[in-house]
Length: 297
Image (cartoon, rainbow, N blue to C red):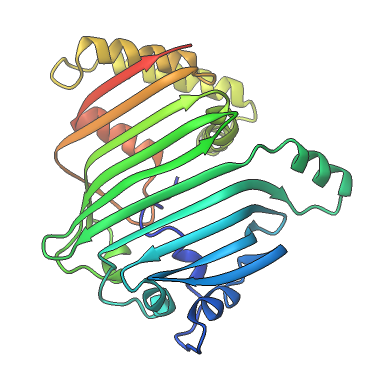
C-alpha cells in the first residue's frame, strides 16, 4: 500500500499546466486524463474548491470507479493543484474531500461482464480531511472514511510530522515524514474481503512467489500469531493481545467491530513513496504502544 494519505487526488492532477482561464475548476478537471465523463457529467465551482457530478475515475486501462458526486476543497487548493507539477514550496493548511456513490467500473470489451459487475455493485461513500500547521510541521489526517451500507465501514486517522514550512519537495524525500499516531477502525460485513483481501493476496504472491493465496495467508497468519505472542506487556496489554490474536485468526473473514490504535514513543520515519503495510506492521511491533478492541458478530 503506497503512502496515499496526503492530499487525496493530487496525483490525478500532476500533468496539468499552470495555465488558467475564467473557469479554474473546468480547466483543472478537463485537463486531467484520469477523470472521464459519465452520463450527466458536470463541473461546478465551490468556495475554495470544485465539485464534479457523474464522473469516472480511471485507475487503469480496463478499470475505473464511477461516482455520483465528488467535492474537494482546501486552502487555495485549486491554484495549488494547478502548480503541483512545479512542486510548490508550500502545502495547503487544510483540505477535505467527499465522494458519493462510488462503484467499481470495469472497462472491458464484454457487455455481459460489464453489466453483471455493475448490477452487483453496492455504492460506497468516501470522505476525509486534513489540517497542516506549517509553523511546526504538524499534519493531522482526520478520519479518512469509506462506508458501504451493505458491507460495512472503515476509517483511518493519523498524526504526522513534516519539516517546518514544508512544501511538495519534502513529500518526496525519504525520512522527511514521521508517524506518531495511527488509528484504524473497521465494521466488517464483507468490506474487508472485497477491498483488502485482493491487495493482501497480491502482496503475498509478490513476496512468496506462490500461486496459492490461501496457503500464503495461512503462513502470514501463523507468522503474525507467533510475533504477537512474543510481544512484551510493555507494548500491548493482555486484553489487546487477546483481541488482536482473535482478529488475526479470523482472517480472511474478520466479522464485527475492530479498532487498532498505535502510538509511537518517537515518530516512526516513513518514506513518502514506499510506505507499505509490511513496513508499518514490523515497525509497530518493534516500537509502538498497541491498543486493540475486537467484538466479533
